[in-house]
Length: 85
Image (cartoon, rainbow, N blue to C red; front, side, top):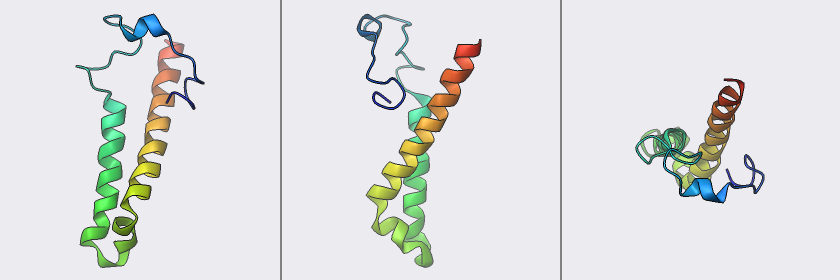
């Protein structure tokens, strides 16, 4: 997020402002939670499906790259939608 979406630019006062740019729903970023759940789900599929065991064996990489990609796509869609409103 910091490097790819915000290009190392932060509004530091907004970090501490109530209802600021970086405040999320009840203190949680829903896009990040969804990306995490999807990454964990796909990693755990390999535990239960023998032919997809490689997903579980490389769960750290599968979870990291899948969750990162999903988070970036969701965050770009949200920021693009809020920019047009």
